[in-house]
Image 1 (tube, helix red, strand yellow):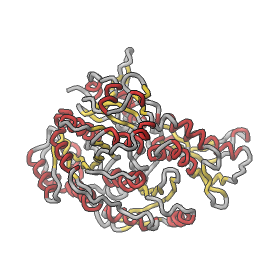
Image 2: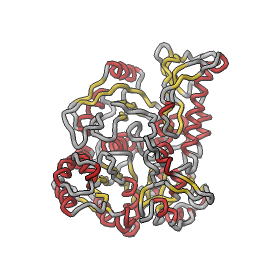
Image 3: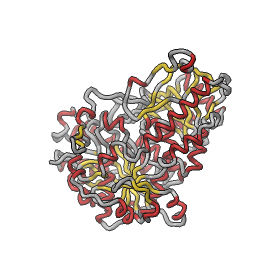
Image 4: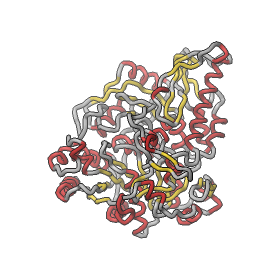
Length: 556
C-alpha cells in the first residue's frame, strides 16, 4: 500500500487555472503561486454579492483518541463523492500548522485517496500566511516593548502585559522566558513567553475578519496589556494596526488548491480549537459559498470544541447557517472510549464499543437537540471493523433518529464517499431549527455555565477567585457581552482528559479569563491547556526528509 505522500505525489494535478474554472472563479481574480496554488482576490466577493449562497455542511467528530477519527479525510472524500453524484461542491478547510506537522501529526492534508494537493506545500510553507501572521504578531510585540523603552507615555504596567511573541513551531523552551537582559540599551527586563502562531489572536482576527477595513479595526482593538490603573492598552494606542494590516493584506486572501480528484478546495487560516475558535476563515467560507452549491467545511477536534465554536462564535459573528452536520467516528476510537486497550482495538469487542458509544451519541444529540441541525454519522471505515460492530453503531444512532453512513474514502476516494454524500444531500433539504447555545447578553458566568451544562453535560462551572475577579473586570470594561471561547482539553467532554466516554456530574474549573477584543470573544482557560505545545519523545520531524531532487518523504 502506498503511503499518503506517495499517493499525493503520484497524482496528476490540474493547473490551478482549470480548478478555478471548475469553481466558477474567473482568472482575473487569481493570484498565482506557481502552477497548483493561487490566492483569490477579495474583489470577487463584492462582484458576486448578489449571487445566492450554497448550502454549508459542517464536518465534526467525536472526542479524538490515539486511534484516530479522520475528519479532514472524510471532509475531502465527501466533497469528491458529491462531485461524483453531479453536485457542484467545493471544500473550505484550515491550513496546517508547522508545529504539529513536525511534532505529533506529521501532516494535516487528509489521508489515503482523500487528500488535498499539493500535499507537501500545504503542510509546509504553503503561501506564507502563517509567516505573515507571525511577523504581524511580533511587530506588535516589538512596538510595545519599544514604547516602554522610549518613555512609556501610555503608562503600561510591565507586570500586566498580556501580548506574547509567537513562532509556528512546537517549542516548550519558549513558554516562559525572561527578555530585555543585558543592560538599559536592551530594553526593560521582564518575564515574557511565546505562543505558537496558531494561538495568536491575530490568527483568530484574520479568520473572522470580513475585509481589510474590518481586519484593521479588529487589529486596533486587540488588548496588549493594562496600565497601572487597570485601563486596557490596545494596538491602536500603539499606532500599530496600519503596519500590521499591511503585513497581512495578502494573507487575508483565501488560497485555492484541489483534492486528488480535482475538486476545488479553499484552504485558509486555522487556529487550534482547544485554545481558539478552530475554524477556517470567514473569507474562505464566503468565497466558497458563492462558488459552490454545496460547501463542505470542518472545525477542529471534537464537536464539544470545534463544532461548538463554529456554531456559537463563527456562525454568530459571520451570520452563517449550516444546512447539515456530519459527525465522524471510527469503531476503533469508540472502543478506546469504552476502555479497550490500544493494542486490542483491531479485535472485535462489542462490550467496549457499547461502553464507548455514549460519546458519539452525546455529540449527535447536541447537534440535533441543542443546536437544532440535521446530522448524519460517518463511520470512517477500517479493515478490522466487523459487521456486528458496524450494526451496533447503526442501531444506536437510529434510535436517536440519525442515519449512519459508512465512509470508505481513505481507500476508495470519492467513490467511497457516495453513500455519505447521498445522505448529506438528503439532509440539506430537511428543515432545521438552528439556534445558539447561549445569549451573549447573559453574564460571563451564566454563559460559561450554559456551555458546561448544555454541551458538556457537566453539573456546573467553577471559577477560581482570580477568574471571578477577571470576569468582573472584563464586564466593567464593556466586554461582558462577547461570546465565550472555551480553552479545554479535546480528549474529554470535561476538563480532565482522562474522563473518556460520556462523563456526567463533573465540574469544569475556569482558572483564567482573558479578552480577545479584536477577535471578538472571551477566552476561558481550563485545566492544563497551554498555548505553546511541546514536541513528543519521537517527533514526526525525525521521519521527514528530502532527497537531492527535492522529493520529500515522511509527511503523512
